Image 1 (cartoon, one colour):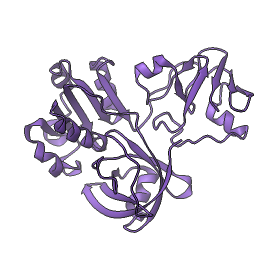
Image 2: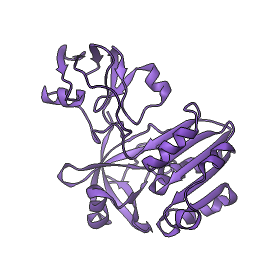
Image 3: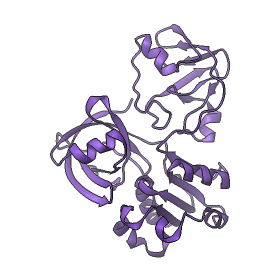
Image 4: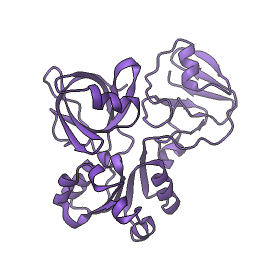
Length: 305
């Protein structure tokens, strides 16, 4: 279970049109948990709101986490309009389902606020001496965060404002990717377009909104191995909703299969993975699942709950 930490907002800056950056420091003045490129934290806001934000600072800095927040929806609007320097927030994490794997070559694709998890990735790839390129698209240059920070990488970074150049030329970019490992984060339309052009064995993605769910939702049984109880998961109810109704406490956040908070160990049965987090290899392994959206391929699952 991810740690719950009280932090204080140490700095607040405008990064671009509609994007603010927050520096978060431990409220007790101590060090924060370690993390790697691709990690995110859950930020607990008012009225039970929780939102996931990628860490975009320096993983070597144990005193400070940085996040970038695009103003869209009630959670981010609260951050923009209400959160100020000195405020205390509760965060959970960090957790990472978008970790940077070792590779000699990378192609990074970022759309809009999707640059946040990519930023520490390119810094790590540069430090490791890897061959890499970043293609960063946005609606317009003024809405694209971290342009000054990225300028130090020179021609390795290609800035692609839509009002100047149109949409990213994915055919040309991915056609020349060769054996590079591709990392992509951005809006769903961009991710879907990249997936159409790129084999899953070389593609790693992170989503802000869930994939479209396919498949029937049939009823099945779930055995809770730690309590010895067996519950019936009806067709119109998720595993998460079912165990919560039975009084079992499970940490969760997005409830749509994008954040990884409700990840649960599978001890028996075959999961029907419907999340937007796990890689194909992790799905094939079947060792854990996101119980907010995923179901069972068969009559029964045994979970470590």
